[in-house]
Image 1 (cartoon, one colour):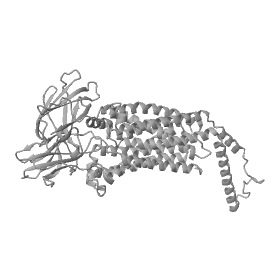
Image 2 (tube, helix red, strand yellow):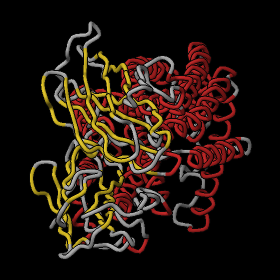
Image 3 (cartoon, one colour):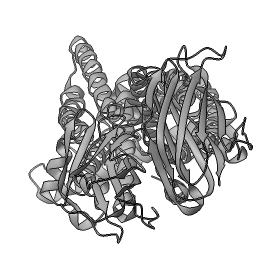
Image 4 (cartoon, helix red, strand yellow):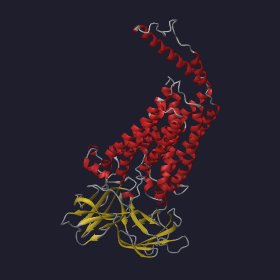
Amino acid sequence: MNRTTAPRLRTLLLLLLAVTGALLAGASPASAHAALTGSDPAQGVVARTAPSQVSLTFSEKVAMSDGSVRVLDPRGKPVQTGSPANVSGTTYAVKLKSGLAKGTYTVTYQVVSADSHPVAGAYTFSVGAPSRTVVTGTAPVAGGGVVGGLYAFGRYVSYAGFIVLAGGAAFVLACWQRGAGVRAVQRLVVGGWIALTAATLWLLLLRGSYTTTGSFADVFDLDLLGQVLQTKTGAALVSRLLLLAAAALFVAVLFGTYTRREDATEKRDLTFGLAVGGVVVAAGLATSWAMAEHASTGLQPGLAMPVDVVHLLAVAAWLGGLTALLTALYRAPAEQPVEAAAVRRFSRLAFGSVLALVATGAYQSWRQLGSWSAFTETRYGQLLLAKIALVAVLVGIAGLSRRWTGRLTDRSTDAGRARTDRVPATTTPGGGGAGGDAGDPGDARRAAQLARQRAAVDAARQKRLRDADENRFGLRRSVLAEAGVTLVLLAVTTALTQTEPGRTEQEAEAAASSPVGSGTSAASGALTLDMPFDTGGTDGKGVVRVGLDPARVGGNEMHVYVQRPNGRAFDVPEVKVSFTLEAQKIGPLPVNPDHITTGHWSANGVQLPVAGDWKVAVTVRTSDIDQATVSKNAQIG
């Protein structure tokens, strides 16, 4: 690396660290898909006798630990005993102490959703009669603190390691097979493997503390590690480690046996075998993310997971290949320069990767945003717009690189080789070589030193001739610029994984801008809220109407009607309702209404303990994979 290159690379590294730190500082916790759909005792109920246990039912299976569910008496002391257990399906229960006193009890829970993110919430019930208790600040903080930051850093390192490992190997096999013998490229790919392996082990150790206590002292708790291994995320991380063992064998063959093959037929067959094996291993590694994170739950997971795998592979082929090309342009020795043909092949590979990214990215954007307005009205959409802008800039710079590639020739390298061929061997008249008497140790050392000096001079001459090609120089500059934009793009992309999806954020914005629902009847004291929804499925549009009577503090009667756009009753599989008073940090208080008839649900005794501007959120599920949550604010007096 020359003197001008090192400062550039250091600047790029500092830029990556600065942008990543800024984005991490402003990132909000990732949205989770699991939700509490029912409980016993139910939210707001006043039980005549003290229950023996509290059971919670979620919309999907969740992972729990010893402290995942807490039940606090009116003075804030825990009254649960033992650990929560799965009693049936998605229902989990924890035992309570006997002889509970009268008053209002608070139930808090912290579990891990199917998309690997921690989920927390709280609700209240009473024994005998309610007491003056408000749910505020009692729910655990999920996924935060020092351990949360370390876990996030491990995720970023794992993504970067995968991109360098898979993309660098693809660049060698598909674009520059001679690069398998270049030490700088070997170090790059092996470094990617080491980073991904270390980060995976790091995440496996941190996972237990990340989803439970948040204490760094629990990182090496073997009991927590055992619990992690039984979860979907733990299985995905272990699968990734097993696939990394196969990747180690792949790398060993690529940089070992493959570089020593000289027979054209044997090398072609080995290239095909490595290509097939490499694609299988890379796809398996990408699947270890898709099967355990956002793609595995929510809308259309059966389609979202393979799309996510293709997206990750395309990112690796483009950005990882770009990293390998940058390394080759700056670090390859003068006698092993990257050829113009190899650069052209990578240009075609990058173009195909961009097309795949556009197609899969469009689907993922629809899945997470749901509307055009979410691009500008939500943080997720704004980050996505920034990502799209960076991709556009990157594609523009790549267009310049393609122009330099079209002009690139290898004549400087050929000239350098010709000069090398014309350099005569240094011999003495006696034919004994540069040292004269081969038996003289001093002469042999001088001959070896002279040979090294001439080799260094010759290598420097070849490098000057190679760099004298203005097209090659322009290509190096444009690829370096691409790498700089790529660092910022990667930071924005990783920030997106930590940001609440636009669908959820936009629903909250709509609720804030519409403080009172339509159809409010002041005379009767009843309240009616009409909220259109769209779950994104083939038959997912409709209107949900929530009626609350008398819309006052205390017990209320609630009716929920779901209708199609034409006004006919819509028989959807599931409806869930929750109430939140954000000003006083009360809730969400979930209500699980009973199905009365087609398109009609009802619940009695819905307890709203405090007057204020309550957010009423309704989740409508129209199929096994399609659901949406809509909300409006209503004044409860």
